[in-house]
Image 1 (cartoon, rainbow, N blue to C red):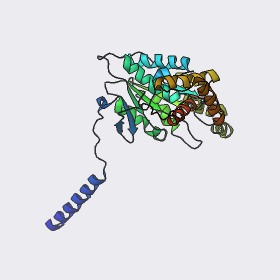
Image 2 (cartoon, rainbow, N blue to C red; image 1 turned 30 degrees about the vertical axis):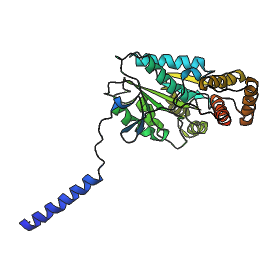
Image 3 (cartoon, one colour; image 1 turned 120 degrees about the vertical axis):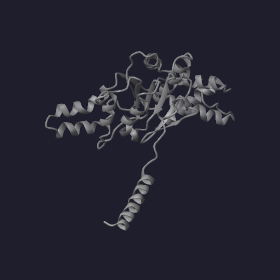
Image 4 (cartoon, rainbow, N blue to C red; image 1 turned 180 degrees about the vertical axis):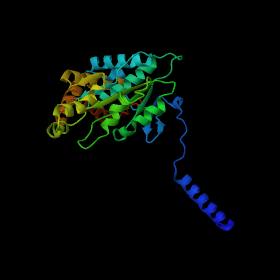
Length: 293
């Protein structure tokens, strides 16, 4: 190869190198964990701070006193550096599962003195669960405790990303970081559809082991907290609590009658239905609801 060919080859290699640099994603800077108390995970490796979290005061969550106390105690122990469990909040829709997680996070932070590191809440979307090991790696060395939270977690029959969740929670060589707990909400106690479990049972060489593989996902959560449909009294107490907290002025007898009619038309009583009624009521009487409660 003569000198001109060498120069030409060098130029080609430099163009290739420049093209590869343009294609490669930029190196992401380390997250600024002090920027907020709550973040949303954006794959493959970014945390978006949330300035104002959409939540209600924990005192407004009615009819779930035992669930509230269990989750608060577990979260407080974790923030205090004591042993605590991953938590699966499962059961009836609209009964405050995700609201309780966000409210418990705020309540625990409100109790911390200025010396203690703030408890951080990181939401990961269901479709990003496969990236959970990467998120664990991002926060492993950070000087804060983290609640990693996934709302409405469940898996379809052809979805194998549940294996990433299992490995991140308990398995792997490194295991779950000591400064991380995983909280998830779901309508399913076992997270996987029944037909998925039954299909594994019918097609596996050892049906019992196949079913154990699927059901064992929920076993990674040390605490299971169940939520059930609320009673009429609890439903009305939820509405009364919102009305007082938001300062709505309305005739008590009409309030009760209209609230019950609202639940009947929805075919359900729940915290979500109660809040939706209060939103409708506030709009009808021309009053704005305060944000960030």
